Image: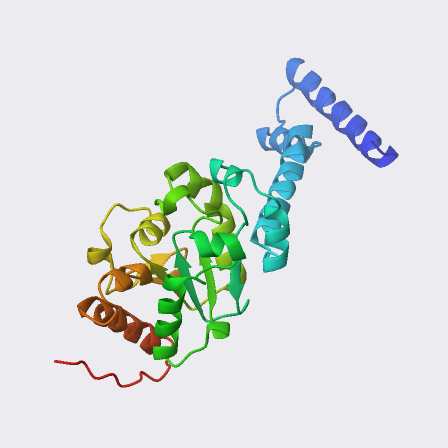
Length: 264
């Protein structure tokens, strides 16, 4: 406390005591308003100062939380992922499959997980399903290097089984960070496992596809997995269902929709 504050406090105490003595002595004519004025003019309790300090700290924290976060690159996320052993898939994989493509892509394709070819090469969608995905991308008159491709899980599940919930949970934070880094205008979820993992639902892909859903503020279009198209012949009704979905994606991106003739 400085000298000025000390003197002010001393004067206030003396004046208050003097007025109280006069009242107790029976002296009339001391307005009650004077006592109120003296009380209001006194030094503020320390609690008020503490409240102001705490309020200031809260405001500062809120300002920091509201500040835009620094952009995180895909390289930084991959480095943070490291030689991942966050789930049991780490023990059986050959290569971790992070993602590939344009780090600023307008369109991102997300599959469920790597297969044998992807596990061997460390790149997503390089086997037969990858060739079918390349065909879809080419039909959209885009190039593979124009888009970004990744999976829900980064390691191959044994025997190409669907990823289990604990495996999805371990990988999901990194997938979200990838998508937030790329900031695509549209996400395409390829197949049941990818769509259900991203949308946190058990609804089958046949009922999810054909319309946009919201994923953390990003439009997401579920569609059939390229491997499903392979199993169904690659050019039947399933292919045209996927093409209908991709037509909506192209229209959302305000890109030309190539003419395709359906064989009767």
